[in-house]
Length: 146
Figure: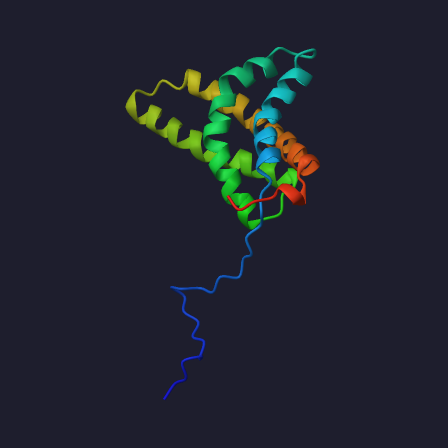
């Protein structure tokens, strides 16, 4: 007879070994909004492209990035390089599907290819700047479960 306390490892129900981390909501909100804005302000004297990229890509960055970054932060410690890689991966996953749908529908990829080129450059920049802002502003006192 088996004991009730016997521990069976199943590939269908792996043991939960990941701790959940608390998130500072104020620092997270400022980081997600501030990343694109600071990049646009800092890049405006050099080129006007970062300012226009903030206007066009900022809402998409927030809509797609907030849930992904919240999910990531619950399980991993925040690092700017990790945020940059995650922002690029999220962007490529989102716009690869959009590109495939546009290609299958009518084959006109002129506007979408421009978005892919600029987004592939700005997504990791915004992610790393957002990660640096969060890393700088996070305080243990304000962390909560989200």
